[in-house]
Length: 306
Image (cartoon, rainbow, N blue to C red; front, side, top):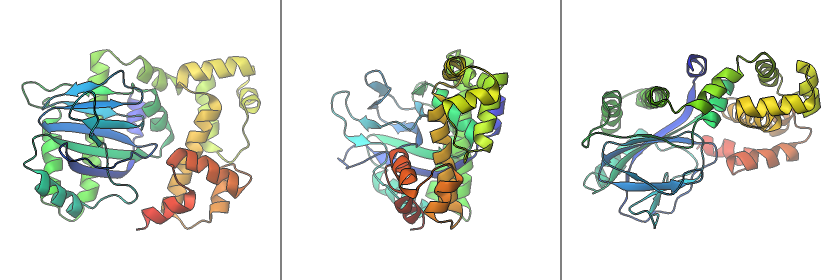
């Protein structure tokens, strides 16, 4: 697991306090991971990939690594509030502090963190992890490995200083790593370990390296299998077993992650970005990106510049 965690680089982190009293229209963007810390009261979590509804108590911490649709509510039968009620640009720490002050007296309070990652190995790790990692509290307190990190995040929210947004991003990363440590120590990690082993497998590791290094190549299942010297059927089965998805699905995810980085970090045109990650036309790229992010590349770039 050390290889994957060592390559963890988070971006687009945001944090906010949530109250479960008010009805708020919400949506969760595709591709976002979330960590919830129940600070006060109790609530229910439900969503895609979660078997039934999970009851959360004060002190509990939940990691949802796969970016699937989910919601928090006051009962197991009626969802009241979804994970994040904002979309587009992330809220500033000043905005978060105001929200915290307004909701500080709420019966149910949850510290909500979300993040997105654009580095290949950790992307596969997130996909291989269970849909939900539940770290139970004890007598209303967070586990000792998490409590200091939660206190530091709350301090940055309540009293923001220069660089607070970057500090909070690193603290969310620490929460994530502690959640993975909990998962590994619990013995419930077959998928995560399989993901780690995928990069050590001589055939699958080579194919992952080729994909990550040459996203602009017009890869097919046949060409990837030929590049690593095995038959298509053997390669497809082995890749699915080790990585947890098909080779072409992994290729699509990596292309979208690279596209997000390019949209955020430079002024390349949409057509040029499409070409660099292997799409023959801007329209084909836009269709694939909208399936990934729920919006066109142009809209995504515009929102990140607000």
